[in-house]
Amino acid sequence: MDVQFDFRGAPEGGNILNYLLEKSRVVHQSMGERNFHIFYQLLAGAEDGLLQELHLKRKLDTYYYLTDGDSSNGSSIRDADNFRQVQTAMSVIEIPADEQKLILEIVASVLHMGNVGFTEEEGKAKILKPESVTAIAKVSI
Image (cartoon, rainbow, N blue to C red):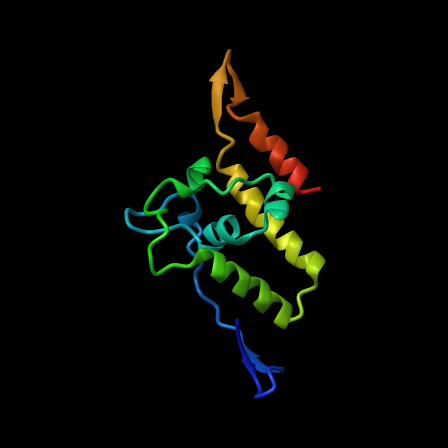
């Protein structure tokens, strides 16, 4: 979505562009690529209280979806600052605070889903990391 603003900063128009979202990037990144920016921005820029509510840790290698490709924070990428810009942008386009939190809960749930993993034990599926399932359930309440 492209939103245009007048000289006072009020939205005056916009344009919606349809494009193919790289869904496969969530589960696998090519070497040298990062996953979606919002994952890194959330972990780097969210206040400690919000991370606790979302059952997240700042350490990138805690999350399987961030371990492929290049999850390093390059010198030109300022994830914490960019997270604050995302929050400001959501407020500018009048996404209510409760909906902003719901969006971040979805992002957190995706990170937790990547950690679940399954194995087989006695012919039945067994969850490898039940704490990830618990985190998804708590975040999604």
